[in-house]
Length: 215
Ligand code: SF4
Image (cartoon, rainbow, N blue to C red):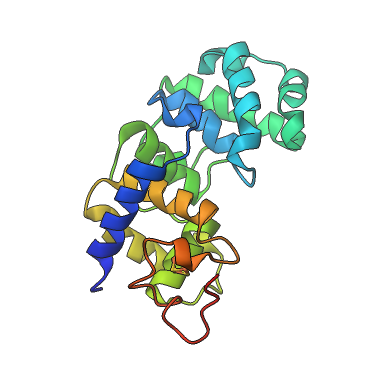
C-alpha cells in the first residue's frame, strides 16, 4: 500500500513528540508490562496508574503475586471495576511463576489466563521491543479510517487489519509505531475525529472522502 511508509513515519514522529507518559512505558520489566496489559483491558490509562502502582508495591515480583490472596487482589483492583478478574490474575501469575519467566512468543502467551491476541502481542512489543503487529479497537479505528478499510469486525478477528498491521510492524520500530497510533487514537482520531489537528490528514482516506467526519 502506497502510504504505509508515510503512515509509519508520521506515527513514530507523533510518538516521539506527543507520547503520553505512563509508568509502564518507563520499564521493560516483563512482569510489570504483563500487569499493565491486564489492568488496561477496557480501562483508560489514567485510571490504571494508581492501581498499577499499588499492585507493584504490594507484589513486586510475579512469585509474590502468585501467592497473594484472591480477596486481596480483588480489593486492590476494585477501583477499576475488575474484581472478577482477581482469580484470573492470580492464576496467570501462578503459571508465569511456574514457567520461571514471562514468555515473549505470542503463541505461547495466548495459552495463559486472561491473555488475548492484543496482550499476546503487546507484551513482547513493549517488554522485548519486538516488531510485531498490534490491533485493538483504537488501532482498528485509526487504521480503518486512514487506509479506508471497513471496520465491521471485532479487531481480534479481523485478518485484513492484522495483515496490514504485520506489514507495518515488519518495517521496524513497532513499539514507537503502535504507541503513536494509540496516542493519536486517544487524542485526535477519537470516535469523533479531529482531522484538522491530525498529522495524517493529507493522505487519510476518511478525511479526504466526502463522508469524512472531519472535526
Ligand atoms: S485525518 Fe481524521 S480520520 Fe484520518 S486518521 Fe486523522 S483524525 Fe482520523
